[in-house]
Length: 94
Image 1 (cartoon, one colour):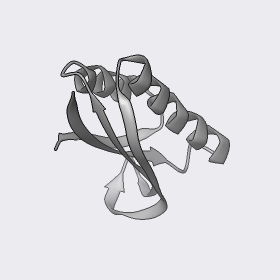
Image 2: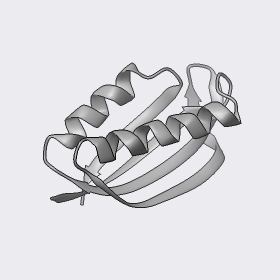
Image 3: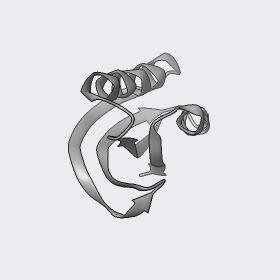
Image 4: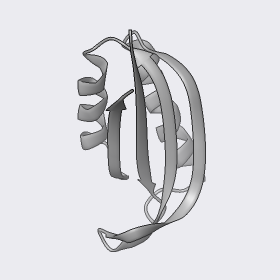
């Protein structure tokens, strides 16, 4: 089991609070369903972006620390890219 950190930024313009919570739960369940174990979820909340992304200047930040098999980051990254409302995401191996 490798240790990973993932940060994703959700759109505050197209998603409301309920949709942001649902997206966060979706990614947490995806990690556990693929053999991962969540260590910590830190919701940073709504923050100003350093530069505009798709004409948006604010985003909702979420940091997830987890352990999982080597195949898990590729699957998580794939789902990040096909999910509407994700402005940016990154997965880092600790």
